[in-house]
Length: 493
Image (cartoon, rainbow, N blue to C red):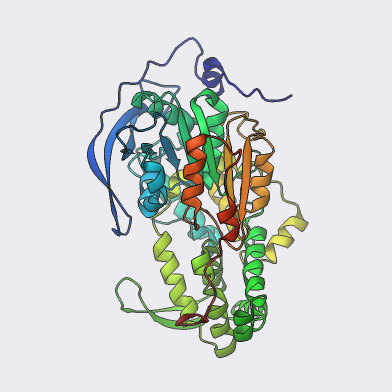
């Protein structure tokens, strides 16, 4: 049976187990005051207006424990601003919208000229009762199952005292988003969402279609998809595409030949034994000595593939290890990417989402697992998630969370051809439900196109007209990723 596009207020309440006859009182107006949003590494500061909206942690118990939702508004520059703001939704799951925005604020400068930009730290992230644990998501890739289980129990003990971990799913988060819209008094809003945030955006659009003027989905997770089983295969495809692109460019091929050979050589060598390395710590400069393993390599390959800038280094790093047995450059890159991503995701919120919305829907055969085992990521992430989710409380989700979404709302869908986690095929699947949508694929780019050349202009034009008809996207076809480094000095002249 097709899922209705518009859910009544009663249907929303029933989906979350609320009695239809007990209307939730309207939220109070949200008071905002001057504040600053800081880059996580203190690189930049953005002037904004901030406030906190208090909501029930459990919508079924409005008189129970309350949590604060951190909201920030970056005001439009123009005094004659447009009435519909842009709400920015971050990825992860587990990344805070305010922290994400601080790292990419320049990409929204054109949009901010005419529109307010609103940032809601999704419940469980940032300053909205952040569910952070000592061990991060990277533990899933490098630890044994016993260690993961022990870390999960510690996390549950730490967070369980101040949070009902079953109440931090997408189905509840979209109700928070609607309460913030109401509290700020915007009749309609536009949405920009990246990665996991695209799931939130689509589900909000499903629940409150009349409130959305337009939507930009960047690194699309289609509504029907349970994210996880294909990640290792997509990461392997992305890496081989990156290395194949190097082999197809004369300067890169002249320097490295076919870098896939170096990749396979390094994988095989580390599978036999770890390599002792000593490299300066990127934060302190002090020597760091550790055994570089296949798991460290997998972290570098996975995270470097997210960004065209990091990917430009991969052939050089692999060649140094394969031809000279010098693993220090790879190890240094591991420390850099680990530092860049450390703490970016609230681990507990991540688990609350994936253990309710993804892992229960995995259906893997023995042959599927064999295919995954042949990749550089292997089955480590899936095995780790399954261990976590056997212990983690499973929250309720709306019955139609994974139903195909159909919407008349204008949509711009953005993908990178080398995206290791949300490949263009995902956007193509989601685009079937957007007859007024346009899907753009940037060749050679990775995960998230927000900062790609000219994308700020394309997004601003799209939001100005709320239509893809006649949208000029020619500049995106001319966009090129960073050239490959052929030495430590950079790309070939």
